[in-house]
Length: 382
Length: 132
Image 1: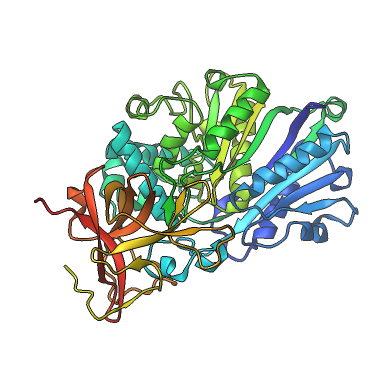
Image 2: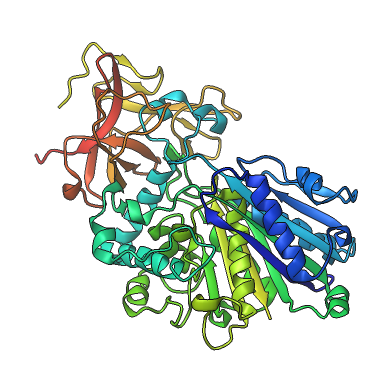
């Protein structure tokens, strides 16, 4: 990297459902909060990047924030929208293009599972007609096989959700703010076996913005900044098992998360043992478990012991999804990846309130994964 | 077992009638096989009839009625689906019939069958091999 880049301001619009407020308005709310946090004005921003999946273009925000003629790149990159915006804003500063940039993500989805048109994915109509083109099925099929191969129990799936709601109850930007006990989670209606309704996140609304600055600007402002040590964004390798797959190569190929994780650790020059707090994509309970291993934090099968011993709790050896993750926050797709980075920034600055990780965490890890097979990892330090 | 006699296949070119019925895939130049055979292949593919038997690779249930384009019969009835590994060929996604979820085990032998999808249409599915 040519120059150190810091996050000097972070803002969020509470996730969940906000009737009468557009996705973009939630993004503007987050952006104003991030600017105030950084102690800069909109006019100071030299570059902006952002977007949503279902709530329109981000550059319209200049209507609300001011016509400063800044370059504003719209991102429409599915689950990687936030990660892509962060990458662009980071590179704008690292390259010397400007000293202050923003990354913003927001969204507002309809209720219920996402439904997709086969033709949009190059798939035949019968695949959708026969009821096999559902994202929730993919997650269930992936974790079902993983559980069989690596001895993961249904209780452990339930414990992931239980932890998410417990953490969400402590978090002011979370949507689900009430704890749910293990028995209720395991006994809830099944969606796709082995996953019950409490084990899935829901489409939601929300907005997140981050203000990034060069080292020079950070010093000038005397900011409480968090350094970005690496960002790695990878699309799927050949033969990887992903959503909407009528067939998979045998044997299957590699995983985008493994590639992104390795690249991020290599760039940062550290390993999984150096991480103090992690936010891992938890579209459903099984995803968090599998992503613990895919990101190198444990071996396949060790999750059983981790969850039973509370090692991924806020007070555990590696706190995971400290704000309740997607399970408690919901998933406004365009904002979700940036929420993870926001949460790490709050934790590293010691501003996470009731959900604060003890012992002054120094290194945060965030991982977003989504369709059609992409992962973005960011490592930040303070 | 559902009787698919006299029903129209849900799509043309998905399977060859047999007996035994076989799914139709496409072999790439590097030997890799894909299913189904695409309508608009962007690379040369050789049509291949796939093995009628395989082993269970993963499974789940569909407990709620999917949104359109799902066009199954009303009222909705939950069904099983999964992936079947056809040895040295490809892993295919399929409905699973003739069993219940608590009987499914990784690696169990499965066989392709053609079943009724609704009153007019048939589709493919796999069911556990019957013990000899």
